Length: 640
Image (tube, rainbow, N blue to C red):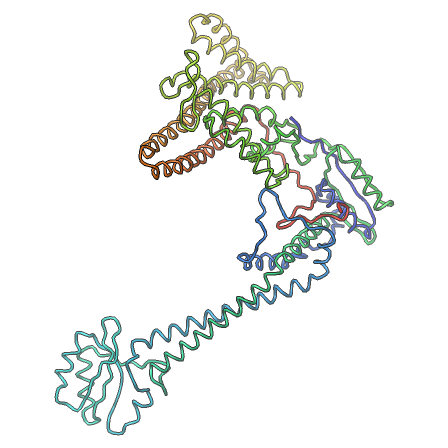
């Protein structure tokens, strides 16, 4: 259980050395820069934190647009491509060329937008003319005759026969040139002497006059052909833009490197803004792990011999940032604590106590030895093949340890890929959640009681460390005696001792819960109110019944899958091949959903039941000035 001890770092140096000192701090990656003290706020540095903000936004946009051309493996669990210092500096020297490629990509995207708008407009015009394709004259032709009026329009197709009958024998011709859904598109030619009568007859049959666009001096078919030619040009230009974009995509790696170089400079700019400065000097403060303080101080002095570097222990009113430090096994469970809240700097790290319980609870809920074996073998191989660093593989290693615990509990529950291979050794082992559920329920609640009592023990340790023995007696020992006594009272042979322990525990709670209260009446009533908390203890213990439910679900689902697959296996050779495939995928599915459930519910039991007994949160995560980036891992000059 370790919260890293921090020291206050104060750096006073020449302003001319600031860049190289910040670069050194960033390369070391173990100093969190904090705001300058209030008394020097009037000297706050004027560095602009948004120095590269627009460039970073532009590069991320470009990389998103070029994503389909990106052949680099996607970073996973911190496995970034490594870029040496010389390559990074070469890209930085060519930064304007790389940014120029992005500006060209922006121009290409603008042109794509223009082409899209043009395509939409041309397609709309073409689609509007398609129903008029049968018209073989232009609008100019329609107005070229002196004795005849010609016009175009539409009327309901069902009315066309009625119009033709109404105008039969008159000096007019009505020709249908197309169909638009339920409308007939017609060309009307009428002698000028009778045009008004024709219009009245047409109007009576819901005729509307229309003038298609783009056919002033050409037929609709000619206009449609012109639109199709324009669409072909748009497609050809779009293809040329695609080819140019593919050429620009060759600079994807340079864009990533430049982005991360700018991001590193941006981090320095933010740190610089938190410092204070005069014309000649600057002041920077931060937190550094105590174990690294002396080395950091020496390196800063080597770079700037005239600097003043001071290391101090945190003051009582200061709240340093929190960094957890544990070994490989315990450290794998740190994400569970971090997912809840970091402990207060002056509290304790619960990870070491929590880790074995978390693995146990996970294993009891997944409870299939075959699934556990699969996780215990596959995850280390995956970490090895992907070369995932220790800091980035914590969650995977947590699942691996959960898999090891699952093997043990899978054997205890006699479940291996949904089968029950272990013979009955004793009257109670292996456990049988299906046929003898009561034994498993008692086991689950027993594990829950141990878990909760471990939380009480942690709270007692914290109170002893603070020199408060009355808190230990009233808040931890009293409850432990009361709960143990109530448990013993349920057994015929231990009822007497149980009564004694319960009474002693209740007495301690009554007298010491409100130990700071001088009024004895208020103290007793406060203790009575605290005793009501026994209901929450019962609720907490019953919460561990989820271990039984989740374990039972895993085993029963696997058993049902096996029964269904067994029916398929009974067929021929082809059916057996299908059964093998079904076995693999069905059990992988069962493993996936129940491993997720085990992770979630094991975390819940830590957060609500276990942490609720002692945990003091409020820690701020330690965020040092470092070399962490988004796309690649840039090696510092010192690392070369």
